[in-house]
Image (tube, helix red, strand yellow):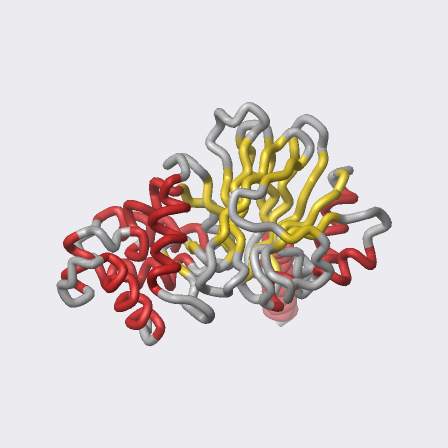
Length: 305
């Protein structure tokens, strides 16, 4: 009887310890703040990109110049996490890069400026952006330490949307582009304030012109949803299926699926493949890529994965 009772106690303790272990592992991966993804650092030539999850599926990014440790933050909707990371890594935060005015991207600007003890230059292309003091447009440029930043005007999701292309001082490395809600991995943003012509210009003219090895850091963790639609459009595209399996593996451990590259997006993103016969056929057969763009977006708006 005593042995039976002891086994029962031992089993209960073991169960509780096991449960505690997995809770700790989850906190280790996701964080005490209940983040949707782990934080990661991506090292590129001359820079480091720190991926910071926010809200339900947003991403913020710290761009760090490897030479000077000067940093800029993209879309800091969670100012406290930004400040915590900057202080822990002993960075010099000097700039805020805002892709567009929507709350889940620009909603932390004013609080960050208030909390941060030093001057912050707040960049963006729309007067609706909070704390904006450096309004930019197509081809404007500035620096983050020794890094070069070029602004790409990509109106459609919003009229003032800006993507930021960042390269090392010499400009020979792979570079990175921060695309907000214009270009997602496997998809694009809704046309809230624009037209198919504008999204075509953004994706297939401006962003497609960047080097194929440019890393793409988008504004949301939408990869699996977007790639499901991409597979629907091109069911025989093996690259899409391979990316879906890779993304499932990443998300199973709550790791981010960003970044991709411009070259990869050209191989699997239907909105960057509107010239392809397979995509045009799916969209009704029109050979005009802009017509195809509009039809794809309308279908995607109502698509259920």
